[in-house]
Amino acid sequence: MLSLDTVWFQVAGTLCNIACTHCFISCSPTNHAHEMMTFEEIVPHLEEAKRLGVREYYFTGGEPFMNRDMLRILDATLLQGPATVLTNGMLLRRETCSALRELIDRSEYSLDLRVSLDGFDGETNDAIRGVGVWDRVMGGLANLAEAGINPVITVTTAADSVDTADGRARFLEVIRSFGFDKPRLKVLSLFRIGAEEIRTHGYEPQERLTTEMLEGADMSVLQCSTSRMITAKGVYVCPILIDSEAAKMGDTIGETLRPFPLAYGACHTCWVDGVTCRT
Ligand code: SF4
Ligand code: SF4
Image: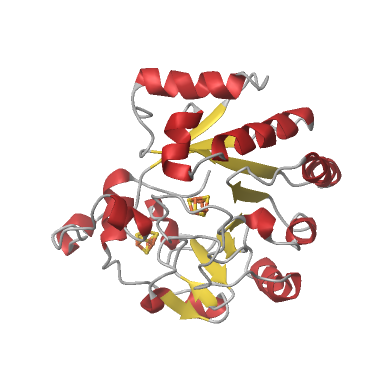
């Protein structure tokens, strides 16, 4: 590890209200591999993160807004740094969006929302995310727009043609249709683990980082060089490997500030595609 500047919370565990066919940790309404984190569980980690000089906080799951403590957790986090929530956008009700607006207005730090789409219409999106998801997310985006919150739309490369200029333009058009005049779009690579391993295929044995690849390399491009992931079961190396018990590095952040062997297929994707889950 080079220097810690970011902490992630698996705030909803592996529980999600949907079950996307590409989810690299196979989240679903019934996956209890990692349980939700309570406000009381989060607070000591926030305090430790502050002592260690962490500058940025991310919240993910599963679906963070399934966690009843989410707004309270954000309120506490925004006293010490900027926060980003990764959400599927289905639970962004009007009252939730106005509560988020209030948090934004009273914090000196920024609060960002990241909303996932995997298609530019109901048919393409719901083929990956499930029937009826598109309509719910469109409702959530409308509520965010009404509250004056411009989210980052994240799209994985499972989405048809998002890596082409035309595909990108179609996503930008969807975002602009809500009146967001400065559309924000982030395209993410897929990790071929979890449900994605079944949807497509896993990693070949040769898809691993080698000593030669890393010789003289700038390790700061890997998010495990500057961040850690906190779950209800302990602190893991990164948001990607929480299904690997070997990736649990300790119970406190302080115990995990050491190098981690980059021996996984997902590490190859991070390196080759330059992936970071940060915004
Ligand atoms: S990709 Fe996100 S929204 Fe889809 S199942 Fe996984 S956690 Fe839930
Ligand atoms: S998957 Fe590997 S390279 Fe990527 S952040 Fe995690 S430990 Fe680092």
